[in-house]
Image 1: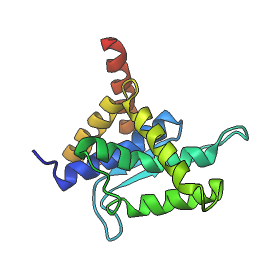
Image 2: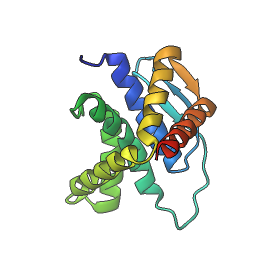
Image 3: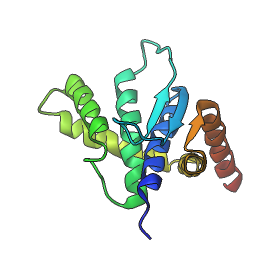
Image 4: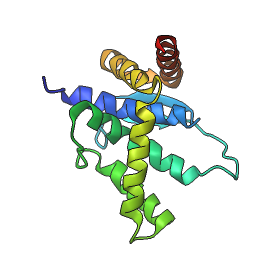
Length: 159
């Protein structure tokens, strides 16, 4: 059965949230309530980066988390639906690698985002957050964190 537009959006936003949490970026809220500009949104809290951290790569990975989760659900990359994320990723990739090597960097980091979502309980966390979004349409960052930790815990218990 084909996933609905709401399911795709829920997985997309859950992918952003889970990768943010994996990479220690606080999540403020996650929503699949559409507005004029977005079908959904994952809003992040402030984080202090240490100089040794690769903040640009983290931003790219979190931005790619949505399309990575969505494609794992649907089997396709809907770049048209994720155009804002893609434009943001492209801008950051050009900043890091230059115009000629940006696409190669994007592919490498998309593969890394997919790998991170498949690791441990991260995919279970995406499923839990997406289910909660489909039920409530919007969740707090605290709820997202709770579901992320639950997914990781349940996966560890199964190992």
